Image (cartoon, rainbow, N blue to C red; front, side, top):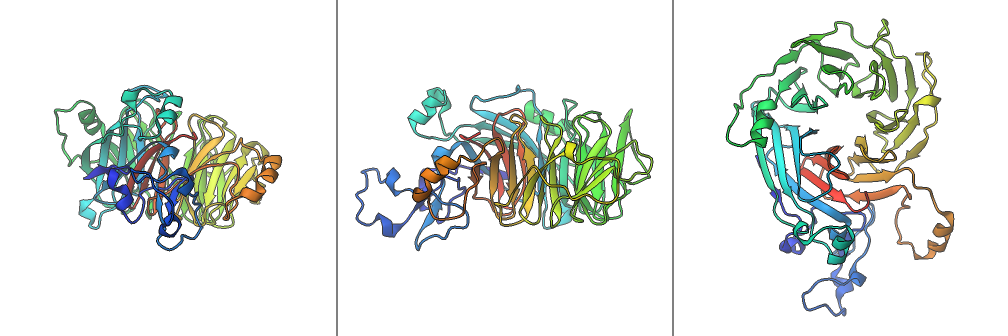
Length: 462
């Protein structure tokens, strides 16, 4: 199915390009190295290193290398077929984990060349050790010597055959087990019980069948879609949105699944993302290629949105509701902009006309569409996002610009794009990044999926 690759192996500098690049990435130029005395072990001194920012041109014979000191952990996993979507499976290993090595469970859906080759992958990544960094840095982090081993991780997996490619996969939240929903490119939504696969990974010795059928299939949509979310407040409530603009609600009652025949209508183009509120049981939000974000209440008999507002000047691709500050929502669009909205300032109860409010904050660092966005489950002001420009960025919106410091360092700035003070970290090295998720039980841990595979990492900045 796939394997881990050690991105910090000794032969790394012999490769033509680096696997990942951090905001503090290293770059080496043969022209600049001429006349510089090298150490006996051929390692570059700090004077040879330069900070690279996306958009800057590389000199002739100059390549990018990952900056080990920027990561607490970084592992790469290649897979046979690209996975456009994945989710992190809750485990029983404890909350707020920080001690290495880590273990993480994921579910993902493939996009194979042939429809019959598609699968749902239930994966266990174990022995996720920290990266080898400077001994002083490791001691400052409070790690013992036995934790500071950059050893090879272990990947185990079980698969389930899936009818068609998987546009999106989402796990039912909570500790009820590994129940998942998939949006297939066939226009169907499938609900799966993946407990046998997850239990087999946790307790080896049994190999579950890979031909397990879905427990339920939703046939109500007229076209395929991507938008999907489970309620975190009420078990078995699933929202799905399709490319025709329709949103459907499916509920479970004593093992029986029912889809409401009345769709939620209001979007005039494809529904791109859906998010249930984490505070109000009947409230959810959606975003669309019609440039709007809409707020809905399932109790309204009209099935019309309670509030609509223009969020971007292009398609709105993704939204994320802050789990720690329930009135904050983030959105990302095709214009490369991501914005943060205060729900309290938007009013409500008036479906028309569509409002055009001002966001609390708005940034345009990415040079291509935003493909995924998610607030940190541990820090209320921190969020991560990915873009079609092959960047994954981490932001802390509590950071304010220090004008005095900016003035004092103006003459020493590296030429290139202006870096917002709220931008904490830039992760690169993947091609065509599709989704990003925080691991809710490992503090500061982020997982990303791209056409080139998966990355799982922790940075020293979060």
